[in-house]
Length: 195
Image (tube, rainbow, N blue to C red; front, side, top):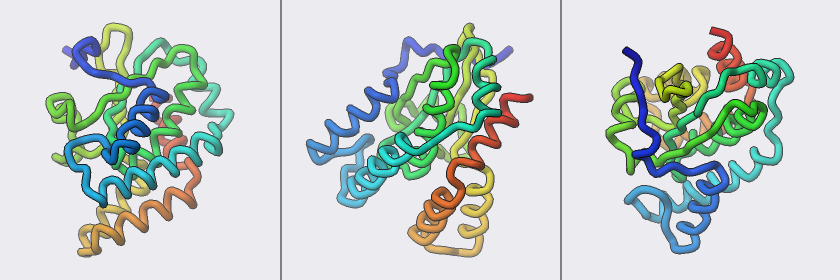
């Protein structure tokens, strides 16, 4: 039996309402989740800039666009948080992909408000985000993706194993995202959708 998700029980956002909610929180000196420290607000500010840039510049390849246009009807449930750098780097690409298909609906939920859901989709035992869960019309799980392209994940694990500082790891990953320009995530989605 496939895993089924009841979206009606979740507080979901569209991408535009997610972005608007982040702006409202930031205006009040807060971010998503419970930690509203200066560091988390700094991460969120940087992530707003990242998403703004990618919303304008991200372009989906013709090959991936063609694949997205013929997908059967599905919902892409995305677990995210405003302070998460990987979410800011990947969410705009995922949204651009979804916009290429009239058959994909996007629903975003916050990780820290949905721990039970998050715990069903752990990455190596951790609550890593963003996590995309594709659901068919019966709300059964078709496939998942996340929290980051494999190239970035492999680099992160290698740096972590080598004992690198968390800040250095983040800096390296964000430089990789900038150089990659969405190629890795698009390649992975094309492979995923061709299965």
